Amino acid sequence: MRIYYYHTRPILSALEEWKEFKHPGHILYGLTHFERNGVDTVIHPFKAYASRLRLMIYNLITILSCKQSYDVLYGTSYRGLELLIFLRALGLYRKPIAIWHHQAVPASNGYLKNQVSKLFYKGLDCLFFFSRALIEDSLSTRKVRAERLHLIHWGADLDFYDHLIQVDKPGKKDFFISPGKENRDFQTLLQAFAATQQPLEVYTSSANGDQQYDTILQAYADQPHIRIHFVKGIIPYELALKVASSQAVVISCLDFPYTVGLTTLVEALALGIPLITSRNPKFEMDIDHEEAGITVAYGDVNGWEEAIRFLQQHPEKAVEMGQNGRHLAEQTYNLENYTKELADILKTLARKA
Image (cartoon, rainbow, N blue to C red):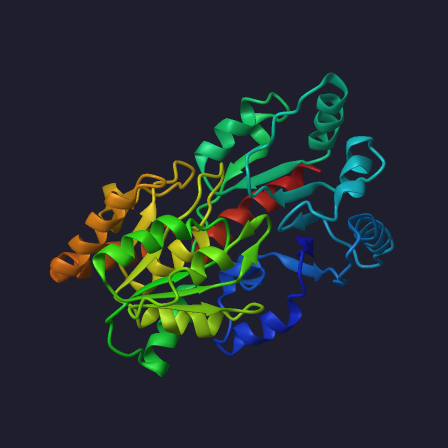
């Protein structure tokens, strides 16, 4: 079978970099491994538009005028596909639509808004989620049917990280690292590291969405053991090399109702590096139960201090946590496993169409 593959950013260059072990494949949501699972792809010609309406119109025209045959429209997000989804809901677009839904289906205030939202979700034949908690929250809105919602054990490209370690041979692990920018709680994190005086490397942007990090981060610029790096664009290889050189990955996040920090988390699992992370109930994996790291309640500075000191004072336990995390990645949360899950569902969807 063949899918029409839609991503919200240009991915052809990333696909070529993946072939040279310069880009992790999991960020492409199955594209790198679909063929080996019996799924061919037609790749959407990406164009960037500042206007969301213009993006939706461009995507609608481009997809409807596609001359190549395909069985299912597969999107890494619904952003930019809204008009097509409404056409599907009205029966005016005949192909099944399967998308990744990165948060739970939202509740709506007001009768009219709720009806429009229900119509929108009627146009989605299949929704992929990162955790059961997101599925349960989605079902509670009564906008979606259970048989259309699927848990995927999204995880890292183990071959990419294994190659990185073998070729680049990361240096000594003598610092903690905080990569990522999405809804990060730097206030809590930096207070804890200021108190413990442990070395920390922060790789982020000066802002992300409504979150302005400049003021918070600059307040700790005079701390000699805290180094802050502002990153522009996407540099997965360079960041992965930094993470591979760290003694532990720290993911301090704000309380948002989705899997904030998941990409950083699965990377740490793949590299066999212990974690300290905010205790996000939307994560599918149980870091504490698997003994792959330590979780801390949102905004708990003292909890962070205790976790940092524990890893520093118990290096043997930290190594064991890293090994447990790698085992979890090999067993469940990896690119090959989740692509097979996706392919099986997409093939079934195509047969039912």
